[in-house]
Amino acid sequence: MDSQTKLIHLMAATAANVHNSQVLPELLHGQETRVWGDAAYSGQRDIIRQLAPRAKSLVQTKAHRHRPLSEVERDRNRTKSKVRAKVEHAFLVIKRIFGWAKVRYRGLAKNTHWLQISCGLANLYVARPRLLAGM
Image (cartoon, rainbow, N blue to C red; front, side):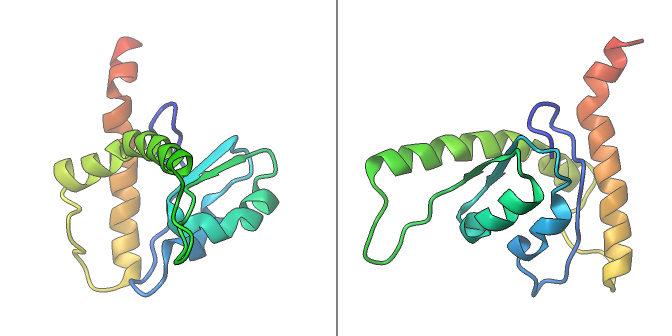
């Protein structure tokens, strides 16, 4: 997703037993300048460097059992979360306006198709002020 325009540029649908971080290579196209992610992506920094060499990794810092986060690290994570929350608006559109709150169909192919259509419609919905301004 583009953080400037809030438009979805790539999506991937997986089975429930596949973690989001496992499909990260499919979600990077190589032209990124920044990659944002929660603490689940903290082990993926090498993949980000390899697939998007010009991208700055802004993945949240993960706390460990015997080393909690410092106050500075917590503040950085909070700032990163604020940016990621703005980008989540497209998912609100998909869930609330287009009704993708639950899996609808049996089978990954059908659900992937529904999700692709929903992402396209969400892009149109989010971009509608810019599209209407051009008329």
